[in-house]
Length: 165
Image 1 (cartoon, rainbow, N blue to C red):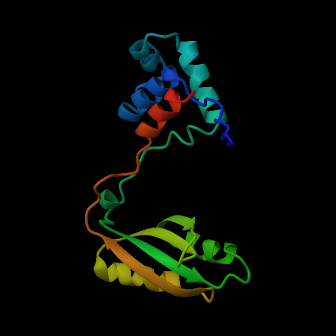
Image 2 (image 1 turned 120 degrees about the vertical axis):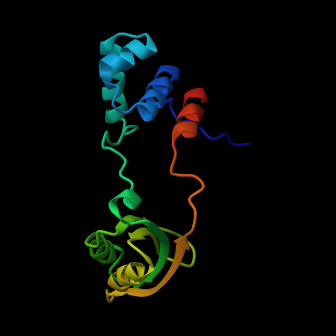
């Protein structure tokens, strides 16, 4: 019987509380966080620095809502590509399209899954035309998102990581 090694603990309870606080009150600042958590300002700063260094906190940038910018239509598009030259040529093409928000290499029928936005359904057609206007894109299959039931979240992962031994 083999055992899977457990990863080293990345976050502890204080880290988890700090991350939860920053998620709910992103403008609280280091001093406010130290007061709210009941720890020294230097402790909060050291924790933030460590979490950034470890890559747990990737950015302190605001979360932008595409709908509030005039892009209320969201779609997921699966692309099949010619892979002779790899993915990079298609990724470069897609990166130049502002409405492409995410690009993921995948297994299965498609090679890439992308999240895109548009101003309306007609504009979605324009965005899809721009996406497939690349010699490396063989086929695209698009699904319009009707309702988002759960936005991307990480809180439960942080809590689980803090509990892991």
